[in-house]
Length: 189
Ligand SMILES: [Zn+2]
Ligand SMILES: [Zn+2]
Image 1 (cartoon, rainbow, N blue to C red):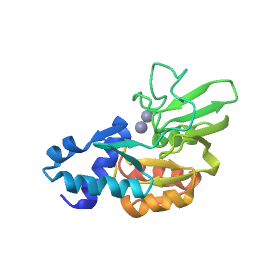
Image 2: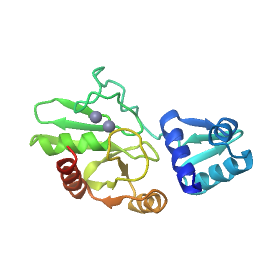
Image 3: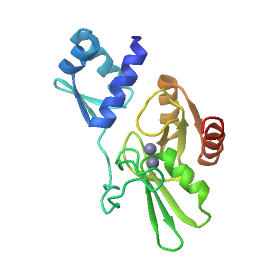
């Protein structure tokens, strides 16, 4: 496995589980602890994870728990479990609040409803809920977290761009991301 690939897998694990242990990773990937420490230092230096004794943790979430008060039914689009790290919430004119598992489903929901008053999505790195209109979306990075193709939300375009350099994909605004998503869903329904 290439170094880049291993780092992508490690970051995906950190974002999914909240933390990782260097010893487990070394055993899992069949590499030395030193190699894992270099991987974690790489993620740390870019602000994508925080290195701690014996491993690494996800960057602190700055805000509200968007999953709090969320319906037990899961994602309004696909039914998947709601995750704080990829939260996406639509407020509709009729008072309905729709929660999506990730920006992939959130943007699909948004495209399908004409009565959305506000749309908020969690910044992938910091967890802060931001207005979808101000967000940058990374479409199709090599990171499997929730729905495919993966779409990640960033409050800062610069952070999204740095992430793109490590993980690939296209950095788009929400309308472009919606269009790209609809196109890829039409090709691979
Ligand atoms: Zn979903
Ligand atoms: Zn999803």
